[in-house]
Length: 57
Image (cartoon, rainbow, N blue to C red; front, side):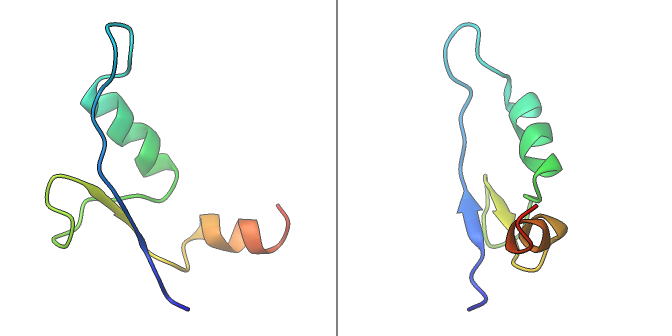
């Protein structure tokens, strides 16, 4: 099944990561901005992360 994952995040706590730091973290894990997730991030199926997970990494 070709389902993606939508992600909406907010910085948390006084010592939490900023919005830019959170987005950079999620970008490294295959999430990206997309028109279907205004204000959030989306990860499409079939990214290298998915392939890695399927092969037992």
